[in-house]
Image 1: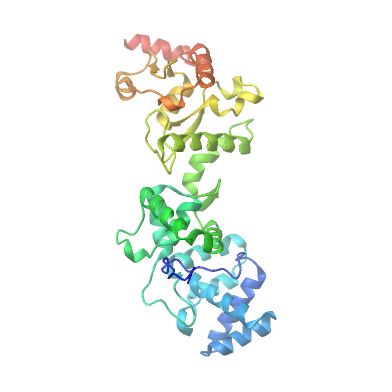
Image 2: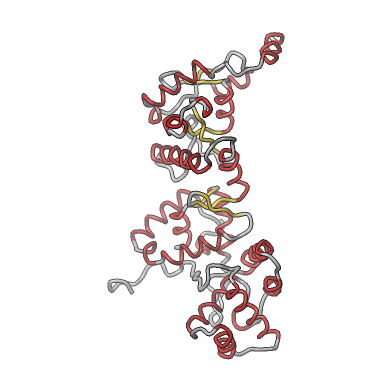
Length: 365
């Protein structure tokens, strides 16, 4: 009860973490103790608690939390039914990397946050599967989107995932009803768990598939001579500017307005031509999809002072048709950005082509 009223979000994802480091020896020793107990034919929950309490020297309440965490994650079966086979593999793993792979399999196959040792879930919820399908849909999950997901009963969404617009609407309701504030710890615990699973990665407080994060960040972060942290801050500023202008929960290309899964923080005045102040100035950048970024970076296109695309005379007709009429959205045009664009028109546009390419183009005309 809250302020005398019935609490609204009762079907939230009930994940709590007695331990957040799954490679910690205490976590592993408790799991080993449980596995050994079931191997010896144990069936009494009180006796299992006593065994763990004696081994670890901790209170009964802490023991119950640790055992229930193992049940929710899928290491142990609810209702004192034993353990899943991979739990023994986890106990015997010889490296953190091996444990990470096993943890990922266990959580994906068996986890159910409505389970506890004494109260098995009446039907399998599949919250992690729901999360992964939502991640497939929206490409990255922010803290607010994760909070929104945790406030729903997955059975209410038969398609098996949430869209970006659904997440935003659910978050507003969850915030209004106090769910986000009340469940802050559970939300952070789930994020910690997700960040420890194979093929998931947390960058700039958003959760990505590893492959998407590699495309979105690492190719840019590792360009020779660039500070990777400042490059990420620079890109984040452009993403924030894009989301604010479009009123969108995800960044959009500043020329097409489309939320491509991969967007590039493209320098207008090239990084190598810029001084220290200009290199990470957000006004010296546009958030672009890969096709336009490549054309812009190589000097095949530039933009006029009022934002219209100017194509190179060396572009193929099909490309000209594809980009024809494109322009930078008005909200991203300002004096500072157009100052940099003047440099691009004068020093980059049609300046980067090799002589053999131009000779070949002229021969084909």
